[in-house]
Image 1 (cartoon, rainbow, N blue to C red):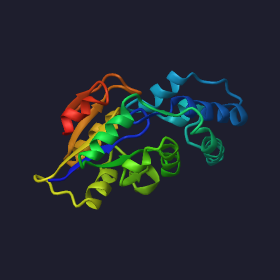
Image 2 (cartoon, rainbow, N blue to C red; image 1 turned 180 degrees about the vertical axis):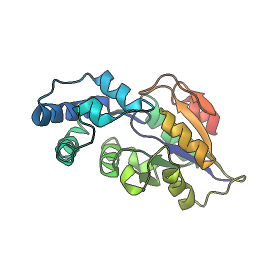
Image 3 (cartoon, rainbow, N blue to C red; image 1 turned 90 degrees about the vertical axis):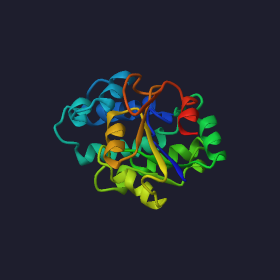
Length: 210
C-alpha cells in the first residue's frame, strides 16, 4: 500500500506572505500609484473563498498583462528574500520521507516560483513532483492537479491512501473531488477551517498519516 501526501505550498509549507505583499505593493506603486497594502490584507484576500484579486490588489476588474509582467519580474527576486518554512515542516517532511511516504506539492502558484522557493529552503528534495497552476488547465479547487500526482504514482483507490494538506477551502474541495482525504493545515495563512482531518501544527500530521 502506497501512502501519498500532497501539500499546498503558500500558507501550508511556507510563509511567503511578506514577499508576496512587497511585490504586490511594488506593482501598486509603479503601475497604479496606489498606497501599499498590509500583509494581513493580502493574505486574507488570497485565502477568501471568492474574490477578484485584480480588483482587491489593483482596482481593476481584469489582471492586466502589464501588471502581471511587472509582478513576475519583481517577485522572481523577491520571493526568496523573506520566505521561511513554518516551524516543524522540515522535520515533518524528513520523518514522512524516512517512513516511505510519497510526497508532492500541488500549488496554485506558478511552478517557477514554487520550485525556486522550495529549492531555496532545501525542501524540494522531498517531493517527487511540484505541480503549479501553469502545469494544468484548471487549478484548485479543480482536482486536475491532484490527479496529475495520483496518476504519476499509479494510485489505486481502495488499496493506497492519499491526503491533500492545505490551509484553503480550495485544497479541501480539490481533495473531495479527487476522492482522497483532506487535512486542514491550521498553522499557516488560515487558522480556522475543516476537512476530513484538522491539524493545528505540522507534527500532528505524523499520527494522521503514519
